[in-house]
Image (tube, rainbow, N blue to C red; front, side):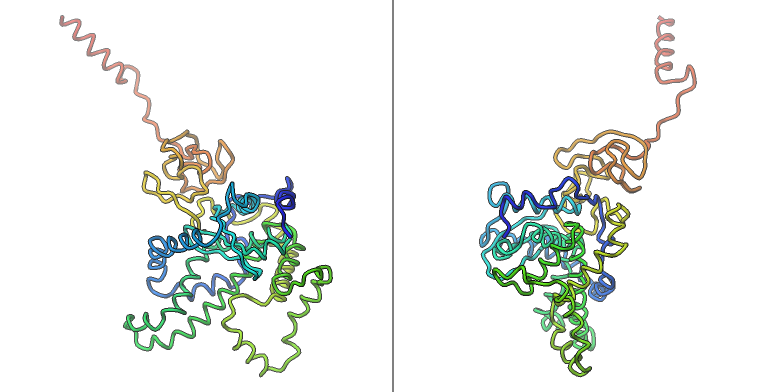
Length: 390
């Protein structure tokens, strides 16, 4: 069970925990995740429509329902849980989502939203997992925000719920034949996305064992028997497909095609493999793809006075240098890959550091006026001529 005291002593709060500033989801994406997603994004106008719907309708509705039916964690209610989510978001360089707790006997957690994001934690999950196991799950959920999964999850839901109505409005011959391939592509992407987010959970926790035991509890937890769970035995179950004939295997695949999550034994296997990989080790050494502006990830955006939409995790607008909290431009100095003032990661398109607001490009200065020809010299000359005439 996670308790407030145990959470405060959790691994993620260790001074040795490695932060991953500006990490991009592309640094840890599971093979095939982006390719599987491409099949969904080919639906004409889908992304534009979903962004509009989420901004003006669905995210507001989700907020209202969460706010009315669940308890929101913050500085006053469930402060230790909110602090844990905030710390995990700091490690993964992710905007802090809203956090809700709900009474639910099923071990689970989920993330909703693309701009106004929120994580919902089931009471049974908090009561059943240790602080480190809970950190892994929270890191997993933050992975969905880093990857911007909320938008495309909604696309899949719309395909499932409103296909018949949508297909009658789209004048494309044979569009009805596309439903099954699109849904198969959606489910395949969803499962791959879960592997991607397991990697995010590991990068947050930076210790594979609590991640493995936490996943094991999601599949089969028995009170007071936790010590008898064996990770190796559970991973060996992922090879069960080799013990059946091809007909059984094909029918099983068809029966489970609609599953949104991979089977736990396979998730355990993939997570352990990743924990032993050079790709994982490189990230912890600081060798990873960066996204200083947080362009792809979900999370709130602030409308700057210059017209830019700025990721709320930044302190200053990277285009005009205005503070996100106060509309005041700041500092100046030459361009580079890191800010001269605070060392924050910057890119060529950032005129101002998103962390401290310092200018990151040289502002051309007018050439010095030749002696006797400066504006001040001209003014003096005119004044002298006027006095002479007088």
